[in-house]
Image 1 (spheres, rainbow, N blue to C red):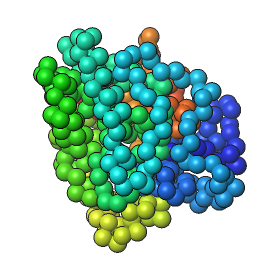
Image 2 (cartoon, helix red, strand yellow):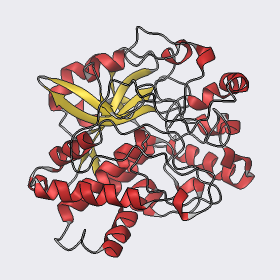
Image 3 (spheres, helix red, strand yellow):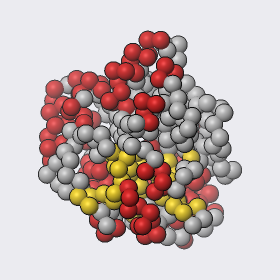
Image 4 (cartoon, helix red, strand yellow):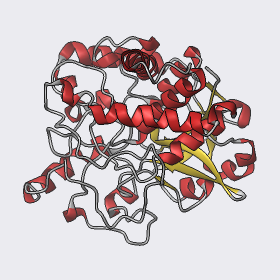
Amino acid sequence: MNGPIPAALGFDSDTEHRLPPKWTEVHDDPPMSPDRPYVEAYRCGFGRFLAAVACVCAVALSSCSVEAQPDTTSSSTASSTSAEPSLDARPSADASSQAALETERDWAIARATIEHALEQGLDERPIGELVAAIAETFVGTPYAPGTLEVGGPERLVVNLRTFDCVTLVEHVLVLARLTMSAEGELVADEAEFRERYRAELTRLRYRDGVLAGYPSRLHYFSEWIGDADRKGFVRSVTRELGGVADPRPIEFMTQNPDGYRQLGDPAVLSAIREMEERLNREPRWFIPEDRIADREGEILDGDVIAAVSTLDGLDIAHTGFALWQGDRLHLLHAPLVGDSVEISERPLAERIQGFSSQMGIMVARPLQP
C-alpha cells in the first residue's frame, strides 16, 4: 500500500527494512496514492498521517513516479514454482478500462497457483498449512501501493502481480479456499473459474460480501477480521490466546479526510463516520507485545496476523501470515521497504517489539470452506 520512499526523509540502516527515520517511529507500511503523490485512501498503515510531510518531499521528487518498479537490489527472491507471479508493471490506477481492474496475467497466476497446489496434493492438508504453502509461492512478488484505487466508482480489482499487506492476505485466502473446494473442471472452465474467484474475493473484501460503493470496503482491518469471522472465512482467536481489551476509539479516516480522495464526497464521509461509530461500540481484543512470545506456540502456520497500531484512531498497522521457521514463529508479509513479499528476518514477537508503532497483534485462523 505504499510507493517509493521520499529520499529527503533519509534512511535508518540499522532497522530490518531500512525504514526512514520518520517512519521508524510510526509505521512500517504507509500506503500512498497512485494519483496524488503520498496522499491516499489508505487501507492499512500510517501513510495518511505523513501526507503533509511527504507532499512537500514530492515537489523535489517530481521525477520519481509512484509507479516505479521495486529496487532490484532487494534481498528477497521469488520462489521457484509454476505459480511464480510476473514482475510486469501493473496498469495505471487511473485507467478506466478493464485492464485497471484485472489482466490475463492475473488470471494465469491464479489458475497456475491452484493447479500447482492440486498437483502437490496440498488440498489434502489442513487449511492453515495450505494457506502458508500458497503464501510462500508469492515470496518475491513486488509490493505496490494503491492497487485498489482505480478511477471512477468502487469496483472489484483482481491483481496478483503486485500486493500490499491486505491484498496479499485476501488473495491467498481466496486461492486456498478455491483449491480446497475445486472440482477438477473448475480451473478448466475459464469463465466459471473467474466468476467463482470474483465472487469469493468480493465476499471477503466487502462488508457482508456486498460491493456497494467505497464505504462498503472493509477499510479497518479489525472490522475485516470480524466480518470474515461472521462469513466463515476465519475464526478470531485473539481473545482465547490471552487477548486483552483495546478501548481506544477508531476514527483515523474521519480525522484525516484530506488523506482520502473519496472522502471529498460528503455522503461518503458521513457513511465512514457512521461506520467508525458502530465499530467503537464493539469490543476489540489484542495480544500485547510482551505476551506474544509466550503465546506463539498456540499460533499456527497460515494464521492471519494483524499488528495493532499505537497511532491514535488507527486499529491495525500491518498484516500478514504466521509462518513457523524452525522453532520460532515469523511473519510472511508484503512490507513497504522490503520492496516485495518476504518472510521476516526476526521472529514475530521480536519484530513487533522492534516497532514503537506496534503494540501487539490480533490473530485470525482460516477455516475450511
